[in-house]
Image (tube, rainbow, N blue to C red):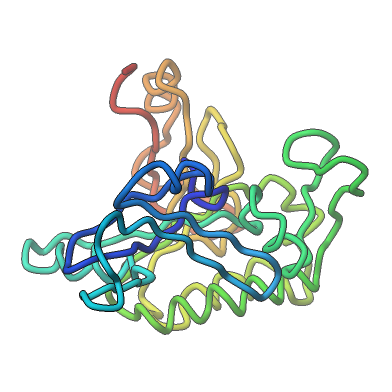
Length: 242
């Protein structure tokens, strides 16, 4: 859960052995075989503690993991399809991403930064985020069979418009690399489960563990309709309490 705060999807290696990322430079200074990443605007600085080893004489490497591609490759021999999770907004804990993508939280409180105005339609952000999502979709292609998009809480302000950007342009970006991919947009915890938009292919279906039975009882069947279109009923909840 620290991704986007101080933890990064990459690693530092010496002779093929992965080092452990630390939260602060001070921790790296006292912990051999560890590293820390510092990002400021367009500059990324990596600090590593190689202990007694000389990284100029041995094989020192860094990488940024293509995590989705790695997972898809591992799952393919088992015929397990991959769905990708993304937020509908910028990484909320990353102030650089928020600023560059021009994203703001849509209501007072929550992920709103101190003194920051709340969102609105955020058309510029939506175009930026659609470009990012479209690039990922084209990069991963048919290795991603679907998308579960979280945080579509402000749909009336952002997505329910006849002109783009809207739900249609967002869905199109997500399917740029695989037109057959399935998409769900999460409106938050809702019981009964709802179809958030006829532009989705299945319901996000987020419910709390103690609501699962009620959500199932209230389901009309395999399909839920909205504006004349049927989407697949689906529930997302917890496997247990621990």
